Image 1 (tube, rainbow, N blue to C red):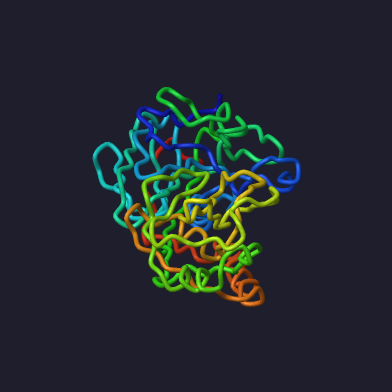
Image 2 (cartoon, rainbow, N blue to C red):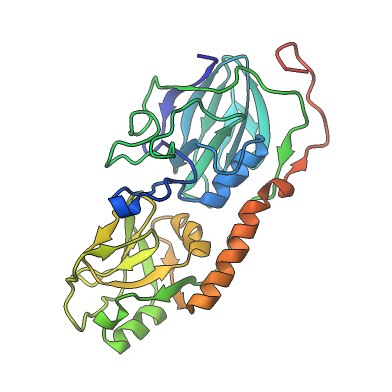
Length: 326
């Protein structure tokens, strides 16, 4: 092993995630992947990786980790998480070099649920079905297809880092306002006034959720044509409404088919913003048409494709110690 990142006390919802597993949903395999793709891309770009490289994803708190290699460049993004190295505060949305034996602790953030810890050159993991993304229900990806646990050693691709200026980037600004959706494909299972009521009501994000989906709490949505449909395809962002009338928003680990009517689907450009809403947050929805959703997706993809250009070098070079490459 060239070196590793050692899990001392990882948080309760820590996995390896990358840009996701593509092309397998038709075979019943979930895509998994980062809950906040822009934050993952930013973390990777800060340490010099391609934006979709596998990183440590955590919810609420990242826990404690130790550097078990000569040197390691790291970055934490997703929100304003409380990050420190051996007790010294480290800024989020900025890269930092750590030495062997140093401990990095990642606490909570007031503005986010999901965070990312990226390392320069990435982890030496073998892709499964084209991705290292962890999907726990099928046991795919990451470390044994499971959450990370105390004592896990995440192998690094490089034992040391190159000597260069560190990078920083502005935290991602999440626009306030409604989450945009495209209605359907089964909005005809609901009375017209029920659809209008959904779009005019406020819902609360509940604690009932994980990477597969999250329940909302608010005015019940009345079905007009029953609440069972022939199971068909679902994707992250689908808003299903079971018989209880409360909406369920599917997220990155969602199943590939479902048998409840889908009232609407959150557009890709807004899905990470929704995923970062803490339990208790009030959310409203705005219906847009497919053309507008595709236009917004184009802007979203352009941001991801250009993320490396948004990095800014910090003013000062670090002191050149013996353990850095020239």
